[in-house]
Length: 66
Picture: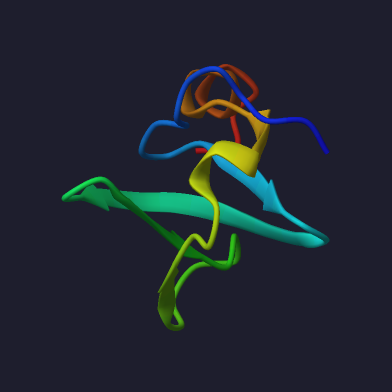
């Protein structure tokens, strides 16, 4: 996995290691994630610059997934 040049944005679908997640918030530089199915607990990303963006929020809206 390669590091990204920029942080993901709220609403982006990302991979944290082998776990798929959605960015729910960025508070004080901490990226918060949750499972893509919705609901459930949030957790802080361990290494935000190592998150891989699978799809941006804009791409998910265009595909009709949001």
